[in-house]
Image (cartoon, rainbow, N blue to C red; front, top):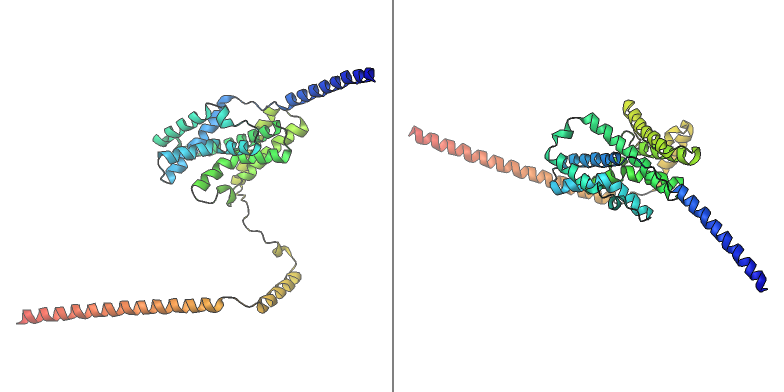
Amino acid sequence: MIDALAAIVPAAASTTAAAAGSTAVSATASSAPASIPLWIELLVVMVSAGTGVLTAREHKLDFVGALWLAVLLGLGGGLIRDVILQVGNVYILNQPLALPLALLSATIVFIFPAIVEKPDKLINLLDIFSVGLYACLGCDKAYVYGFEPTVCIMMGFFTAVGGGMLRDICLARTPIIFQKGNFYALAAIGGAAIYIWLVRWIGVWNILALIIGTAVTMGLRWVSIKFNIQTPTQVDISRMVPHRHRRGAEGASSALRQETPVVGSVDALAGRRERTLADIEERRERERRAQALARLRKNKRKRKQRRLDM
């Protein structure tokens, strides 16, 4: 019995070691992030920070507000992604140059806005370039940590447009990505989807996939602007129903409206009547005052004329 146990223990240990070795190999193979040159990452951060300062100047914010919007636009999307992923790797903390360069570029643009205000086309080009690059990098980071493709695409989306969404929330307005317009969020989703498809299912080198995903994002944005393709705000499928079916549905809905009593209509009419009467009375009072002033001025002119005649 003891000899059998002694034979089993080394075999189990060797099996565990082999499994650990295979796990380490797979972890090493899946932990190869798309390493792009550092200057490109920092350039994207600086461009995004500069656009944040321009937005702050449009809304007449002070220097602190401009810096805040710059940091949100440059690093907010990556911060949202890292908080959701919870893998302990926060870009804004692990890259010591990101935050100082974002603040430095924001300060320069705040003091010398003419540097970036005139070349609008260049700013728009760099903006959509940063969106595409952020989308692919966010998707890549989630893929490195073994998340599913849908999660990777969602992380790429958050990284690309999260900073702009935080900016609009701080400015108390509806985020631009939720408004009708040319492809922006959809372009980021398309770039992230192409990246994960190329890396996961085609086996393309991640740097090449990064370039292609960024190009797809920029291409979708350009096509939507070139042909004025905008995201819809209202969709009414009932218009696609044949007329005879739609007429029956409209008759049923009208019958339902006739049967359903209108609640609060009497109170609304009474309130409107009171407001109308109050407006009429106010206008009459203004007319009476105007007539009284006119009579006073007329009497004053008559008295003055009599003095002159005397």
